Length: 386
Image (cartoon, rainbow, N blue to C red; front, side, top):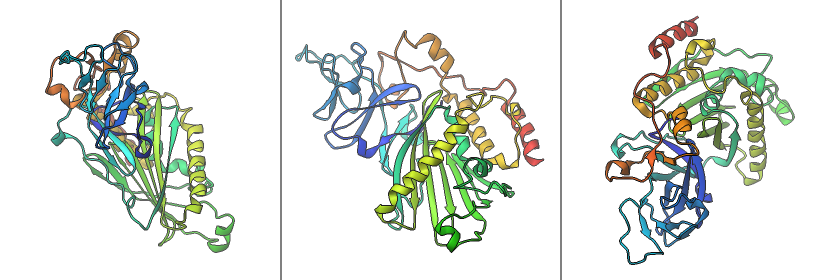
């Protein structure tokens, strides 16, 4: 799991007048709204005696601990200690506070300590705010590591076999050669696929459907996997998934599905039903993948040309790990879990000292694999070109 990226923590509509508990990157956080209506995100651990702030209440734009009533503002500073109302609040009485923004109906939290100028940008999600489109929202929980979930969303060749009634034709599963465009924080491609055989009214209106242009992309923040399906020259669908790592083995996928046709609310129920079915089909397969984690060595799996986007995602993960952004889960479990509380790094750590709780341990700034990442990438590239 990686720090110094933006993650979707919750739907905006679900953060109202009460604290909201969320778990991201294996750590517990609390969301609440201040007096200005802005969402704040703090470590959920009260530094007095370790109680869960999300079990408390929101009072005057602060979150109040349910144990002894300590209150914390959106900047993480303790503002009130009821047992000693006249005492100056100790400088160490603060919890980590994380940058927050709301966009596309989601609450985005930056989990890391980079200054604002160095943080990666939020992804652009076309047509979400376009009046000519109708979007519905939902959430799905996968019992699987986040990298495996992201890669599944970028995998065109699984569609005919896992989603044969919705995407792809199992009788024509060929993936035509395609190229990808890579930028600093993600990549995109355009893949031509044979659509499934039409059924029902579609069989009457379009009995011989032409190939469909699918346009997948990913962005490391979210991390977002997006897919546009151009069903006809005038009818299209967008699917956006923000695959939030809950912990090493669980992923919460915040999703949006949009359409530029049948835009009346009466059709929303069917859109949700179709998307849930897709998640169910995916979960049946990917929750049984072994190993749970993506192999450190690229050559422990066989890679082919249709896997280009997944491989580019793996390369980007490696690059961010090499920056020292990878949480050291083994050390965290050995030194902290059940023994000491830890928190994710936040920007305020550079401005104030000391802090009560240590940050989660991060791996050193080096490649994770035993072989060099360049060696693995070069060997895998030979397979891709084969």
